[in-house]
Length: 131
Image 1 (tube, rainbow, N blue to C red):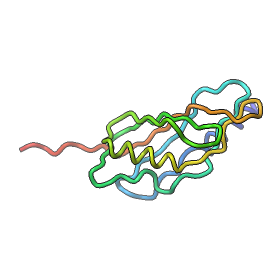
Image 2 (tube, helix red, strand yellow):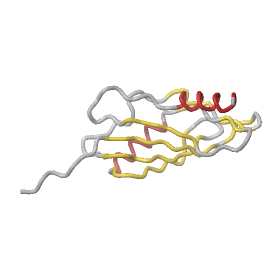
Image 3 (cartoon, one colour):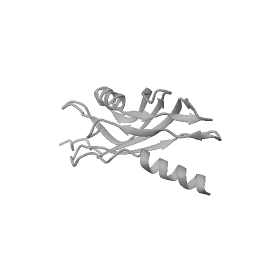
Image 4 (cartoon, rainbow, N blue to C red):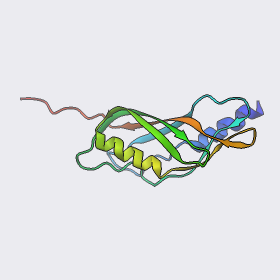
């Protein structure tokens, strides 16, 4: 029971901060993949403040699912973005995640790479009504 509580506390500590107030700012969540016995999940140390910075022509709408790997060195690699987002928005999200650093996951006391899942929620944009 104590181990379950410790993992729950670690997971709460891993969640990204909600970005600074901004109508276009996403709401972010993180969650781990399933871990083997003896594995301690990674802990986020820092990310650039404010979340991904989308350009004027970039757009993202609704829920975006992010799958990525946190390496043995605590760096983010192999980012995939699923959801309604332009190529520029995907590039901005990848650039943002590249600014994040983690205390790597450990298994039996040794750093290991782990698959991680995140989520960004943007306001849903609707197409303008045709006349």
